[in-house]
Image (cartoon, rainbow, N blue to C red; front, top):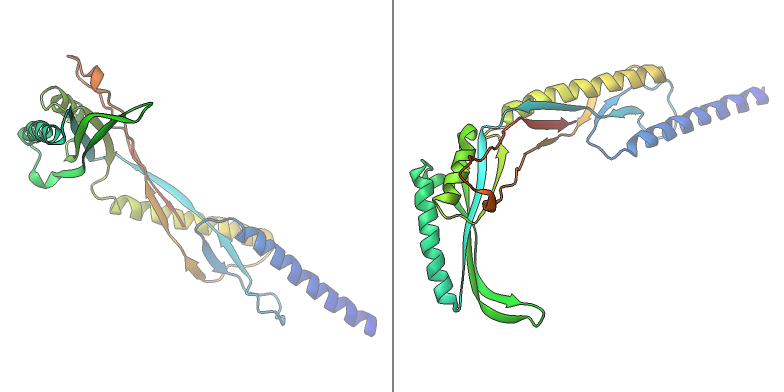
Length: 242
């Protein structure tokens, strides 16, 4: 009688330990997850609540519908006031060209402005003053962004320029990706539960991590020649992990 009791207690303790180790191994994966409860096969004195923790991923691709064009001008003069005044003229020309292309006032933002000494190495001496201004322009016709870049450089006088693509509203794509990610997580959880010989219960916790990628082609103003600039748009990936 005593021998049988020891056997039962030892087996129960070993089962609890194995369940704990298996769950900790899953928890060690530091990703957003879905926690689904699985009914316990037997009650124990521990407070550990058994469950299946898994994650799901989904990517939905969409063509970008908004180009974020960063353009800038700069000036270097012997004194700060001269650099600032020269910069003001260049910036006015650039802004006027952007508006002539059809960019609304609300889609032109100042993203950077600087006036300061220009240091020369190795003695770190000042040989003049530099002023620069950077603008962020929202361009809604992504298929014509190449011509826009050419106009801003060749006719607007921009000396610093870059472009990135995004979605004006990514909510619909994120919602679709989220549904697919949750389905992926549930499928993985079902497979894990089947392998462990348990049944899934209700969902206990869901965490969400949504990201949208962006492509940022470079643009070298030294190459702004008679040939038109080609800026392929491609597609944008919206990823959700649950």
